[in-house]
Length: 325
Image (tube, rainbow, N blue to C red):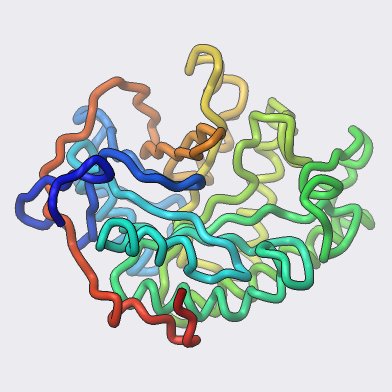
């Protein structure tokens, strides 16, 4: 693609089999970037997943990300379950290339809304197709508040609140609220199992931006706060559902104070046993996510554009469900 104001690509030999697009600027909201900027001292030749039973594909994904750490940026695009690949397709329309990362969400609403849970089956089918076409898959879930059931609205449920008593009940095995939460996450586990059966590894980012107070799961520091809920879903998915295709990501919103405060407040020591990558979100007109492999090297070192962009044709990207835009 020719150089212009919207994107600029560096050219060099491909590395680790990943599709890399080095971009200067994209015009979309909800663009996701994985910035592999780990300091050289933090890199290891053999990155290990936190789940010792991780699938070979999940291990390969983690190893590939580790390999490009400090050398490249992978550009990605978030999509919505009920519109499948619309925004990744739009990136192609503007740039002539598909993003290296295909991002999706499990949704929470109903009907024809873009976040409708009715779109989950088509979304999973699309994810499988995207992976087979070479995409790195990143999934998140704007989770329903466990005091109610889907479908819900974003403002009243996802951005709702739990009382301190409800929070303790949520984390206590066998309570009504805990049992309801288990039913809700088990539903999501079923879709992730479909991806595991299809051989698809996933960068999984549950309970994101937990250091903010705008989601029901967020704003609770300390070992019995948001970190405890993350550990709880990790335990459910790994030890009950045996989901071994996930690379676990611990995501915070961009810190407004010193990074040291961020790590001591929201990264309780037990948390480090569950998450292999940490990412930060910067919300606003465009939403940016930066990712680091643990241990977390907060560094200003910029990635070097050394990887050759990989291009796919419009024909190869056509959804297995027949969705195009």
